[in-house]
Image (tube, rainbow, N blue to C red):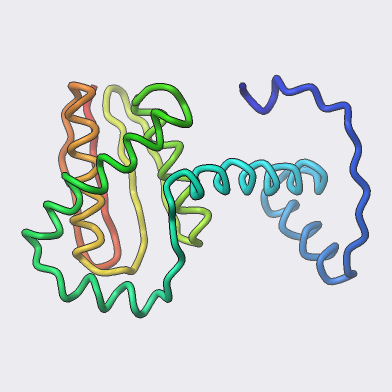
Length: 177
């Protein structure tokens, strides 16, 4: 159900510190929405991501350990991890949560995951081409793993995918309908 179609008839009142109130007001202004809508957006995102992360059995790990582990993996193994393991896990999570694997559901899951982990992404549409830019700073193998996962899932949708850039800190994928 779309957020705009949800009946909003319940009120929650909470006390917060002055600093938190000022932060929420400032951040909501930057996002050009009311503080109330901004708090609701944060809560909905946490509710949805929390459900997905529990379903996927995610664990948290220190960034430096994760980067070091990925550096010890070969490019070939990174490709296998992406196409065999990660693609299946993500596809199953999308089907469990949304009911079907679609391009918009892939974008939605990745965008939530990226925001949840403090990374940056951008999704651009121009004609029949969709571009997904993912800035992560986690090393080239992380880009390879994610690209192979995208490539595997998107090929199942009978769409064309190609990498525009795979580097230590960014992955740019182009999908043609």
